[in-house]
Structures are given as structure tokens and as C-alpha cells.
Length: 214
Image (cartoon, rainbow, N blue to C red; front, side, top):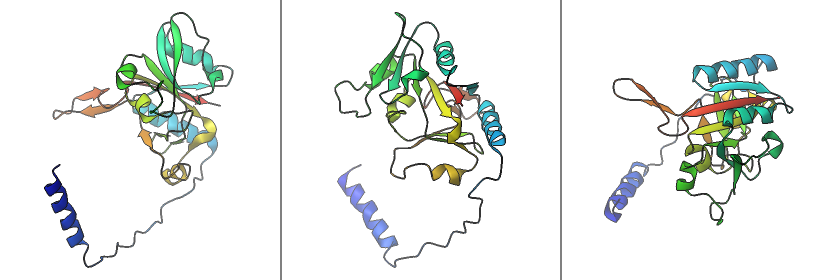
């Protein structure tokens, strides 16, 4: 955008706001808290994720590492954020190993987009999940990592602790830091062309494995 075009846009905005219009009142009489039981909420989230073509697994602290190993396969180079709980991960082998990515992209060890495009998968935790919409929120916490590591690799294994699942969007938003770089995902990346043909993996991972942990 040229400087002249930018100036014109800002001048038009300033002119439109010259009379200091007041924003209309927005009624907020929607539900803010859930009245469902925990099992109902978890079942709802699983149902929504499956409908969006994600793979969903229920695991415990004792079985999660084996599940991650199964989803990764016997041979995989995968990325993990530096704050991820390593107890969730399988033992490394000569053919399967984790690559730690720092949360600060300015660090010399931070993976480039080219590096991320060459790995097989990424394993992260999550901030909160909304059952009503089947949406998982990532907000760049140490166990979730930078936005890039969950958008470039073709396979995302996302661990969702059951105590982080809520039913409603207002409940989910209350758990997210307002200034955090938030990514919301509902199933694998997908879009449709003009003939409504579904194409997966265009804007993010083609495969999403969700592990409900608890």
C-alpha cells in the first residue's frame, strides 16, 4: 500500500468519525455459564470434533504417551513447544525424535518455516476447548508454542486436558488472555472451492488428532 493510499484511507475514517457516533447498545442476554454435567460437555466436544473430521481419543496420564507414539508412528521427526510436559511423550528412538522449538522466534534455535515444513508432526497442549462449537483454543502458552508450529506441519496432535473443556463460548473466552495470539481450530484445516469440493490441509494441518486427557 502506497503512502498516498494509506493517507486517503485514514482521512476517510477520520471524516466518518467526525461527529463522534456512539456504538449501539448490544444486548448480552445469552448464556454465560453452562448447566450441563461434565460428561455431557465432554461427549458434546467429542461429537463436534468427530463431525469436523478430527480423530478423537480418550486417554489417561498412564496411556497418553503410548497414544502419541501410535499416532506418530515408528518413524517421525516431530516438533514440541519448550514447555510441553514430556511425560506425555513416548521414548525417543533412532527413527523417532522430538525437536524442541523455543517460544521466542528470535532465538537462534527457533525453527524456520522451511524447517517446520519438513517435520512429520507437532504435539502441543491447549488452553481451553468449547464443546458447543467444537473449538480448541491455542494462545501461545509455553506448552502450546508459537502459532507457526501448529499451522505449518501437516499433522497436529493436540492434547486437551478434560478440566480445560467448557460448554460455551463466553466460558472459553474467560480463560483466554485478551492480548494473547489466539488460534481457534475446529477440526483439520479445510476449505471448499467454487464447486463446493472439500479440500483439506490448505490453511493448516491436514490431520488433527485430539487426545482428551483425564
